[in-house]
Length: 237
Image (cartoon, rainbow, N blue to C red; front, side, top):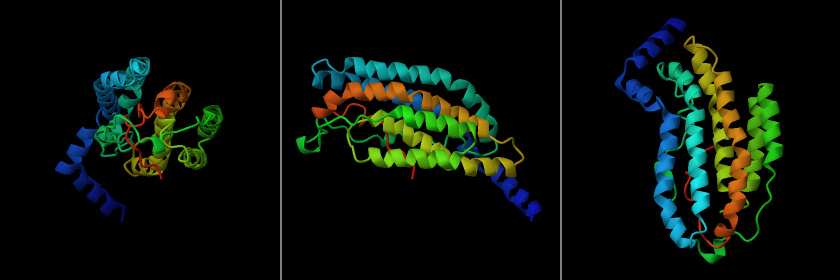
């Protein structure tokens, strides 16, 4: 049975589809970030005009954060290449295509605009993720984030960057077992620590995102969907 499994994997490794998948995953996170930067540079002047200049700092703060992320992710991404070469879409399958950002709206209808800012405490989930990751409790970390995301779903059109990063961490955790099992089957090192490094980077960005979300709320309250229509929804459930 093991021999048969190895034959199947060998055939898969030499298929055109496998080569295309491997190529797609090389530098996938950096490419994703660059696409986000391009998008945000494109919409920044539109938001600026719609907000009478009030959104400029928010747009460029986000772009600056994305540029920093691109630098921080390089080492992690280089370490994931060995898995991509074997057809495991580690830290690649986790990403959502920037083509799936919502269709741009100038203003949200008044009845759909948020009224009160939800004072979400990211510190609590941040500490919890840190402790659970230190103890390799991936399933419990996923459940903790899922509980928060379900609560945040009750507050649409606000806290959009915070939601996006929590969704990304949740999806990473959701796929972690599959990627680790595939690595073991192919005789590769357990990517557990690589996954944890990626989650740590995202976790550490939560305070910054929460701050930007709080600063964006007055504009969102006025119907401007800055941030909310600039990130694609991530399938985390």
